[in-house]
Image 1 (cartoon, rainbow, N blue to C red):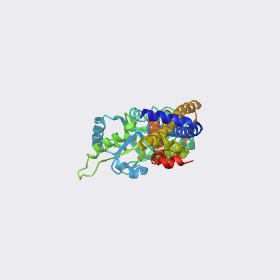
Image 2: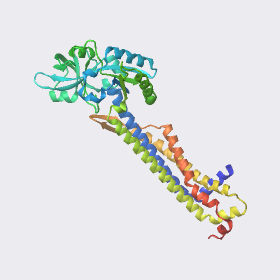
Image 3: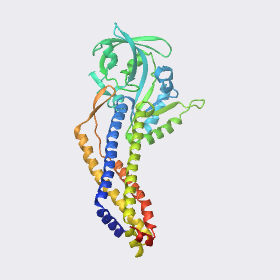
Image 4: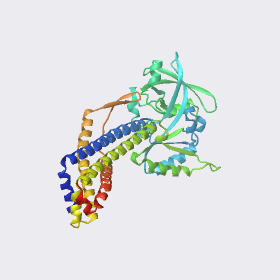
Length: 412
Protein backbone atom coordinates (compact mmCIF):
# COMPACT_ATOMS: atom_id res chain seq x y z
CA UNK A 1 0.00 0.00 0.00
CA UNK A 2 2.91 2.32 0.75
CA UNK A 3 4.27 1.78 -2.76
CA UNK A 4 0.90 2.70 -4.25
CA UNK A 5 0.80 5.87 -2.17
CA UNK A 6 4.33 6.82 -3.30
CA UNK A 7 3.28 6.30 -6.91
CA UNK A 8 0.22 8.50 -6.31
CA UNK A 9 2.40 11.29 -4.90
CA UNK A 10 4.75 11.01 -7.88
CA UNK A 11 1.86 11.17 -10.34
CA UNK A 12 0.46 14.32 -8.73
CA UNK A 13 3.91 15.90 -9.12
CA UNK A 14 3.93 14.98 -12.81
CA UNK A 15 0.90 17.19 -13.35
CA UNK A 16 2.03 19.93 -10.98
CA UNK A 17 0.00 22.80 -12.43
CA UNK A 18 -3.27 20.91 -12.38
CA UNK A 19 -2.56 19.49 -8.92
CA UNK A 20 -1.68 22.93 -7.57
CA UNK A 21 -4.93 24.35 -8.95
CA UNK A 22 -7.15 21.75 -7.26
CA UNK A 23 -5.15 21.88 -4.00
CA UNK A 24 -5.58 25.68 -3.98
CA UNK A 25 -9.32 25.31 -4.62
CA UNK A 26 -9.71 22.85 -1.74
CA UNK A 27 -7.57 25.03 0.55
CA UNK A 28 -9.68 28.12 -0.21
CA UNK A 29 -12.85 26.16 0.53
CA UNK A 30 -11.43 24.86 3.82
CA UNK A 31 -10.30 28.36 4.86
CA UNK A 32 -13.70 29.84 4.07
CA UNK A 33 -15.57 27.20 6.06
CA UNK A 34 -13.19 27.16 9.04
CA UNK A 35 -13.09 30.96 9.40
CA UNK A 36 -16.85 31.24 8.87
CA UNK A 37 -17.54 28.60 11.53
CA UNK A 38 -15.12 30.19 13.99
CA UNK A 39 -16.66 33.64 13.52
CA UNK A 40 -20.31 32.51 13.68
CA UNK A 41 -19.66 30.28 16.69
CA UNK A 42 -17.99 33.21 18.46
CA UNK A 43 -20.95 35.46 17.68
CA UNK A 44 -23.52 32.86 18.69
CA UNK A 45 -21.78 31.86 21.93
CA UNK A 46 -21.27 35.48 22.96
CA UNK A 47 -24.93 36.37 22.47
CA UNK A 48 -26.13 33.19 24.17
CA UNK A 49 -23.87 34.06 27.09
CA UNK A 50 -25.33 37.56 27.27
CA UNK A 51 -28.88 36.22 27.28
CA UNK A 52 -28.39 33.37 29.73
CA UNK A 53 -25.84 35.01 32.04
CA UNK A 54 -27.53 38.40 32.35
CA UNK A 55 -31.25 37.55 32.30
CA UNK A 56 -32.63 34.07 31.84
CA UNK A 57 -30.26 31.55 33.33
CA UNK A 58 -29.67 28.24 31.56
CA UNK A 59 -32.96 26.61 32.59
CA UNK A 60 -36.14 27.86 34.24
CA UNK A 61 -38.76 26.07 36.34
CA UNK A 62 -42.36 27.30 36.70
CA UNK A 63 -45.65 26.00 37.89
CA UNK A 64 -47.42 24.00 35.17
CA UNK A 65 -49.20 26.38 32.77
CA UNK A 66 -47.33 29.54 33.85
CA UNK A 67 -45.38 30.10 30.65
CA UNK A 68 -48.49 30.17 28.44
CA UNK A 69 -49.70 33.31 30.23
CA UNK A 70 -46.29 34.73 31.18
CA UNK A 71 -46.95 38.06 29.44
CA UNK A 72 -49.82 38.71 31.87
CA UNK A 73 -47.53 38.00 34.87
CA UNK A 74 -50.14 35.79 36.60
CA UNK A 75 -49.72 35.84 40.37
CA UNK A 76 -52.22 32.98 40.76
CA UNK A 77 -49.77 30.68 38.94
CA UNK A 78 -46.92 31.10 41.41
CA UNK A 79 -45.29 28.23 43.28
CA UNK A 80 -46.44 27.78 46.86
CA UNK A 81 -44.05 27.37 49.77
CA UNK A 82 -44.64 23.60 49.78
CA UNK A 83 -43.99 23.32 46.04
CA UNK A 84 -40.84 25.41 46.42
CA UNK A 85 -39.55 23.03 49.10
CA UNK A 86 -40.02 20.10 46.73
CA UNK A 87 -38.37 21.96 43.84
CA UNK A 88 -35.36 23.02 45.92
CA UNK A 89 -34.86 19.43 47.10
CA UNK A 90 -34.63 18.29 43.46
CA UNK A 91 -32.18 21.06 42.53
CA UNK A 92 -29.92 20.47 45.52
CA UNK A 93 -29.80 16.75 44.74
CA UNK A 94 -28.71 17.29 41.13
CA UNK A 95 -24.89 17.44 40.79
CA UNK A 96 -25.07 19.37 37.50
CA UNK A 97 -26.74 22.41 39.08
CA UNK A 98 -24.29 25.10 40.15
CA UNK A 99 -26.81 27.61 41.54
CA UNK A 100 -30.42 28.70 41.29
CA UNK A 101 -32.36 31.89 41.95
CA UNK A 102 -35.95 32.35 43.00
CA UNK A 103 -37.93 35.24 41.50
CA UNK A 104 -41.32 36.83 41.85
CA UNK A 105 -42.53 38.39 38.58
CA UNK A 106 -45.15 41.12 38.79
CA UNK A 107 -46.61 43.93 36.78
CA UNK A 108 -47.36 47.33 38.25
CA UNK A 109 -47.40 51.07 37.82
CA UNK A 110 -44.50 53.41 38.52
CA UNK A 111 -45.02 57.10 39.25
CA UNK A 112 -42.58 59.96 39.87
CA UNK A 113 -45.50 62.15 41.02
CA UNK A 114 -45.67 63.92 37.64
CA UNK A 115 -45.74 60.97 35.22
CA UNK A 116 -47.09 57.45 35.50
CA UNK A 117 -46.47 54.38 33.35
CA UNK A 118 -46.52 50.58 33.44
CA UNK A 119 -43.54 48.55 34.60
CA UNK A 120 -42.61 44.89 34.84
CA UNK A 121 -40.66 43.86 37.90
CA UNK A 122 -38.57 40.89 38.94
CA UNK A 123 -38.18 40.53 42.69
CA UNK A 124 -34.90 38.80 43.52
CA UNK A 125 -32.47 37.79 46.20
CA UNK A 126 -29.29 39.54 44.91
CA UNK A 127 -26.87 36.95 46.33
CA UNK A 128 -28.70 34.10 44.55
CA UNK A 129 -29.40 36.10 41.40
CA UNK A 130 -25.83 37.24 40.80
CA UNK A 131 -24.55 33.66 41.14
CA UNK A 132 -27.12 32.42 38.63
CA UNK A 133 -26.87 35.31 36.13
CA UNK A 134 -23.38 36.73 36.83
CA UNK A 135 -23.53 39.33 34.03
CA UNK A 136 -26.58 41.08 35.49
CA UNK A 137 -24.52 43.58 37.55
CA UNK A 138 -22.68 44.65 34.37
CA UNK A 139 -26.00 45.81 32.90
CA UNK A 140 -26.34 48.49 35.57
CA UNK A 141 -25.25 51.69 33.81
CA UNK A 142 -25.97 54.12 36.67
CA UNK A 143 -26.02 53.60 40.40
CA UNK A 144 -25.33 50.22 41.97
CA UNK A 145 -26.59 46.69 41.47
CA UNK A 146 -26.46 46.02 45.22
CA UNK A 147 -30.13 46.48 46.00
CA UNK A 148 -31.10 47.67 49.45
CA UNK A 149 -34.55 47.51 51.02
CA UNK A 150 -36.78 50.12 49.42
CA UNK A 151 -34.68 50.45 46.24
CA UNK A 152 -35.60 49.67 42.64
CA UNK A 153 -33.49 49.16 39.51
CA UNK A 154 -35.33 50.92 36.70
CA UNK A 155 -35.04 49.87 32.99
CA UNK A 156 -33.07 52.37 30.91
CA UNK A 157 -35.83 53.17 28.40
CA UNK A 158 -38.36 53.82 31.15
CA UNK A 159 -35.89 55.95 33.12
CA UNK A 160 -35.10 57.99 30.03
CA UNK A 161 -38.79 58.53 29.23
CA UNK A 162 -39.64 59.60 32.79
CA UNK A 163 -36.33 61.49 33.27
CA UNK A 164 -35.49 59.42 36.33
CA UNK A 165 -32.09 59.63 38.00
CA UNK A 166 -30.54 57.59 40.77
CA UNK A 167 -31.79 58.55 44.25
CA UNK A 168 -35.08 59.78 42.77
CA UNK A 169 -38.24 58.88 44.69
CA UNK A 170 -40.93 56.85 42.94
CA UNK A 171 -44.08 55.01 43.93
CA UNK A 172 -44.79 51.46 42.77
CA UNK A 173 -48.39 50.30 42.71
CA UNK A 174 -49.35 46.66 42.18
CA UNK A 175 -52.42 44.46 42.39
CA UNK A 176 -52.12 41.22 44.33
CA UNK A 177 -53.77 37.96 43.30
CA UNK A 178 -56.83 38.74 45.42
CA UNK A 179 -57.46 41.93 43.45
CA UNK A 180 -56.55 44.44 46.13
CA UNK A 181 -54.23 47.33 45.23
CA UNK A 182 -51.26 48.42 47.27
CA UNK A 183 -48.53 51.03 46.81
CA UNK A 184 -45.08 51.49 48.26
CA UNK A 185 -42.51 54.27 47.99
CA UNK A 186 -39.11 53.36 46.53
CA UNK A 187 -35.81 55.04 45.74
CA UNK A 188 -34.18 54.54 42.35
CA UNK A 189 -31.04 52.60 43.29
CA UNK A 190 -29.81 52.25 39.73
CA UNK A 191 -30.69 52.26 36.06
CA UNK A 192 -30.33 48.98 34.20
CA UNK A 193 -29.54 48.54 30.54
CA UNK A 194 -32.38 47.34 28.33
CA UNK A 195 -31.59 44.06 26.59
CA UNK A 196 -33.54 42.16 23.91
CA UNK A 197 -35.78 39.28 24.87
CA UNK A 198 -38.01 38.37 27.82
CA UNK A 199 -36.76 39.96 31.01
CA UNK A 200 -34.74 42.56 29.13
CA UNK A 201 -37.08 45.36 30.16
CA UNK A 202 -37.71 44.25 33.73
CA UNK A 203 -36.97 46.40 36.73
CA UNK A 204 -35.65 44.75 39.89
CA UNK A 205 -36.62 44.94 43.54
CA UNK A 206 -35.91 42.77 46.58
CA UNK A 207 -38.03 39.71 47.31
CA UNK A 208 -38.88 41.13 50.71
CA UNK A 209 -40.16 44.37 49.14
CA UNK A 210 -42.26 42.41 46.63
CA UNK A 211 -43.93 40.31 49.34
CA UNK A 212 -44.76 43.51 51.22
CA UNK A 213 -46.03 45.26 48.09
CA UNK A 214 -48.19 42.28 47.12
CA UNK A 215 -49.16 41.50 50.74
CA UNK A 216 -47.91 37.98 50.06
CA UNK A 217 -47.34 35.94 53.18
CA UNK A 218 -45.80 33.43 52.85
CA UNK A 219 -43.92 34.34 49.61
CA UNK A 220 -44.97 32.55 46.42
CA UNK A 221 -42.32 32.23 43.71
CA UNK A 222 -43.02 32.84 40.00
CA UNK A 223 -39.94 31.13 38.58
CA UNK A 224 -36.67 29.47 39.44
CA UNK A 225 -33.69 30.29 37.23
CA UNK A 226 -30.98 27.62 37.13
CA UNK A 227 -27.29 27.85 36.27
CA UNK A 228 -25.43 24.68 35.31
CA UNK A 229 -21.82 23.87 36.12
CA UNK A 230 -21.15 23.03 32.47
CA UNK A 231 -23.30 24.79 29.86
CA UNK A 232 -22.07 22.41 27.14
CA UNK A 233 -23.95 19.63 28.97
CA UNK A 234 -27.26 21.49 28.83
CA UNK A 235 -29.19 18.70 27.09
CA UNK A 236 -28.35 15.84 29.49
CA UNK A 237 -28.79 18.16 32.49
CA UNK A 238 -32.17 19.31 31.19
CA UNK A 239 -33.24 15.71 30.57
CA UNK A 240 -32.20 14.75 34.10
CA UNK A 241 -34.08 17.64 35.70
CA UNK A 242 -37.14 17.08 33.50
CA UNK A 243 -37.31 13.47 34.65
CA UNK A 244 -37.00 14.49 38.31
CA UNK A 245 -39.63 17.25 38.13
CA UNK A 246 -42.02 15.05 36.12
CA UNK A 247 -42.34 12.75 39.12
CA UNK A 248 -43.97 15.54 41.14
CA UNK A 249 -47.74 15.24 40.75
CA UNK A 250 -50.80 16.91 42.22
CA UNK A 251 -53.38 14.91 44.16
CA UNK A 252 -55.29 14.27 40.93
CA UNK A 253 -52.17 13.06 39.12
CA UNK A 254 -51.36 16.17 37.08
CA UNK A 255 -47.83 17.61 36.77
CA UNK A 256 -46.91 20.30 39.30
CA UNK A 257 -43.98 21.85 37.43
CA UNK A 258 -42.90 22.74 33.93
CA UNK A 259 -39.27 23.16 32.98
CA UNK A 260 -37.77 24.91 29.95
CA UNK A 261 -34.24 25.45 28.59
CA UNK A 262 -33.21 28.96 27.55
CA UNK A 263 -34.06 28.21 23.89
CA UNK A 264 -37.76 28.04 24.74
CA UNK A 265 -37.60 31.39 26.55
CA UNK A 266 -35.69 33.60 24.11
CA UNK A 267 -36.42 34.63 20.50
CA UNK A 268 -32.68 34.52 19.80
CA UNK A 269 -32.90 30.72 19.77
CA UNK A 270 -34.40 30.90 16.27
CA UNK A 271 -31.46 33.08 15.14
CA UNK A 272 -29.03 30.53 16.60
CA UNK A 273 -30.84 27.81 14.64
CA UNK A 274 -30.53 29.87 11.46
CA UNK A 275 -26.79 30.28 12.08
CA UNK A 276 -26.46 26.50 12.42
CA UNK A 277 -28.43 25.97 9.19
CA UNK A 278 -26.24 28.47 7.34
CA UNK A 279 -23.14 26.67 8.64
CA UNK A 280 -24.54 23.39 7.33
CA UNK A 281 -25.19 25.03 3.95
CA UNK A 282 -21.60 26.28 3.80
CA UNK A 283 -20.35 22.75 4.57
CA UNK A 284 -22.47 21.38 1.73
CA UNK A 285 -20.99 23.99 -0.61
CA UNK A 286 -17.50 22.91 0.44
CA UNK A 287 -18.37 19.26 -0.28
CA UNK A 288 -19.63 20.26 -3.73
CA UNK A 289 -16.45 22.23 -4.48
CA UNK A 290 -14.17 19.37 -3.44
CA UNK A 291 -16.27 16.71 -5.19
CA UNK A 292 -16.48 18.57 -8.50
CA UNK A 293 -12.81 19.58 -8.39
CA UNK A 294 -11.47 16.11 -7.59
CA UNK A 295 -13.74 14.39 -10.13
CA UNK A 296 -12.71 16.85 -12.85
CA UNK A 297 -8.99 16.35 -12.20
CA UNK A 298 -9.25 12.55 -12.00
CA UNK A 299 -11.40 12.24 -15.13
CA UNK A 300 -8.88 14.31 -17.08
CA UNK A 301 -6.07 12.24 -15.59
CA UNK A 302 -7.69 8.98 -16.73
CA UNK A 303 -8.34 10.42 -20.18
CA UNK A 304 -4.76 11.65 -20.66
CA UNK A 305 -3.15 8.52 -19.23
CA UNK A 306 -5.24 5.88 -21.05
CA UNK A 307 -2.22 4.36 -22.82
CA UNK A 308 -0.24 4.39 -19.56
CA UNK A 309 -3.09 2.55 -17.85
CA UNK A 310 -3.18 0.04 -20.72
CA UNK A 311 0.55 -0.53 -20.39
CA UNK A 312 0.53 -1.26 -16.67
CA UNK A 313 -2.55 -3.46 -17.12
CA UNK A 314 -0.85 -5.38 -19.94
CA UNK A 315 2.15 -6.23 -17.75
CA UNK A 316 -0.12 -7.81 -15.17
CA UNK A 317 -1.17 -5.03 -12.79
CA UNK A 318 -4.45 -6.00 -11.15
CA UNK A 319 -7.55 -3.81 -11.58
CA UNK A 320 -7.70 -3.40 -7.81
CA UNK A 321 -4.18 -1.95 -7.77
CA UNK A 322 -5.05 0.54 -10.53
CA UNK A 323 -8.21 1.50 -8.61
CA UNK A 324 -6.21 2.04 -5.41
CA UNK A 325 -3.59 4.10 -7.25
CA UNK A 326 -6.07 6.61 -8.64
CA UNK A 327 -8.01 6.83 -5.38
CA UNK A 328 -4.71 7.45 -3.60
CA UNK A 329 -4.06 10.35 -5.96
CA UNK A 330 -7.42 11.85 -4.94
CA UNK A 331 -6.50 11.33 -1.30
CA UNK A 332 -3.13 13.07 -1.83
CA UNK A 333 -4.80 16.10 -3.40
CA UNK A 334 -7.38 16.27 -0.61
CA UNK A 335 -4.73 15.85 2.09
CA UNK A 336 -2.56 18.62 0.64
CA UNK A 337 -5.57 20.94 0.39
CA UNK A 338 -6.64 20.19 3.98
CA UNK A 339 -3.18 20.79 5.43
CA UNK A 340 -2.72 24.07 3.53
CA UNK A 341 -6.27 25.19 4.32
CA UNK A 342 -5.97 24.47 8.04
CA UNK A 343 -2.65 26.31 8.35
CA UNK A 344 -4.05 29.37 6.57
CA UNK A 345 -7.28 29.15 8.61
CA UNK A 346 -5.37 29.29 11.91
CA UNK A 347 -3.47 32.35 10.69
CA UNK A 348 -6.66 34.11 9.51
CA UNK A 349 -8.56 33.33 12.74
CA UNK A 350 -5.82 34.77 14.93
CA UNK A 351 -5.59 37.72 12.54
CA UNK A 352 -9.31 38.42 13.04
CA UNK A 353 -8.82 38.30 16.82
CA UNK A 354 -6.07 40.90 16.56
CA UNK A 355 -8.37 43.21 14.56
CA UNK A 356 -10.84 43.42 17.51
CA UNK A 357 -13.90 43.56 15.28
CA UNK A 358 -16.89 44.85 17.28
CA UNK A 359 -20.63 44.53 16.77
CA UNK A 360 -23.83 45.49 18.57
CA UNK A 361 -26.69 43.36 19.86
CA UNK A 362 -29.96 45.03 20.73
CA UNK A 363 -29.12 48.34 22.35
CA UNK A 364 -25.71 47.22 23.54
CA UNK A 365 -22.55 47.91 21.57
CA UNK A 366 -18.91 46.99 21.86
CA UNK A 367 -19.08 43.19 21.70
CA UNK A 368 -15.71 41.99 20.38
CA UNK A 369 -15.67 39.12 17.90
CA UNK A 370 -13.21 36.56 19.26
CA UNK A 371 -13.13 33.53 16.96
CA UNK A 372 -11.08 30.64 18.21
CA UNK A 373 -9.50 27.51 16.79
CA UNK A 374 -11.80 24.60 17.60
CA UNK A 375 -9.97 21.27 17.18
CA UNK A 376 -13.30 19.46 16.91
CA UNK A 377 -14.49 21.61 13.98
CA UNK A 378 -11.11 21.36 12.28
CA UNK A 379 -11.16 17.57 12.61
CA UNK A 380 -14.70 17.27 11.25
CA UNK A 381 -14.07 19.50 8.23
CA UNK A 382 -10.78 17.74 7.49
CA UNK A 383 -12.45 14.32 7.66
CA UNK A 384 -15.29 15.48 5.38
CA UNK A 385 -12.87 16.87 2.79
CA UNK A 386 -10.69 13.75 2.77
CA UNK A 387 -13.71 11.45 2.52
CA UNK A 388 -15.19 13.45 -0.35
CA UNK A 389 -11.78 13.57 -2.08
CA UNK A 390 -11.55 9.76 -2.00
CA UNK A 391 -15.14 9.22 -3.13
CA UNK A 392 -14.77 11.93 -5.78
CA UNK A 393 -11.97 9.92 -7.37
CA UNK A 394 -13.89 6.64 -7.12
CA UNK A 395 -15.77 6.82 -10.44
CA UNK A 396 -12.73 7.83 -12.56
CA UNK A 397 -10.60 5.26 -10.72
CA UNK A 398 -13.20 2.55 -11.34
CA UNK A 399 -13.27 3.46 -15.02
CA UNK A 400 -9.46 3.29 -15.22
CA UNK A 401 -9.35 -0.11 -13.52
CA UNK A 402 -11.87 -1.54 -16.02
CA UNK A 403 -10.09 -0.42 -19.19
CA UNK A 404 -9.18 -3.29 -21.51
CA UNK A 405 -5.39 -3.25 -22.13
CA UNK A 406 -5.70 -3.75 -25.94
CA UNK A 407 -8.16 -0.89 -26.41
CA UNK A 408 -6.22 1.33 -24.01
CA UNK A 409 -2.95 0.80 -25.91
CA UNK A 410 -4.63 1.78 -29.18
CA UNK A 411 -5.82 5.05 -27.63
CA UNK A 412 -4.16 8.24 -28.83
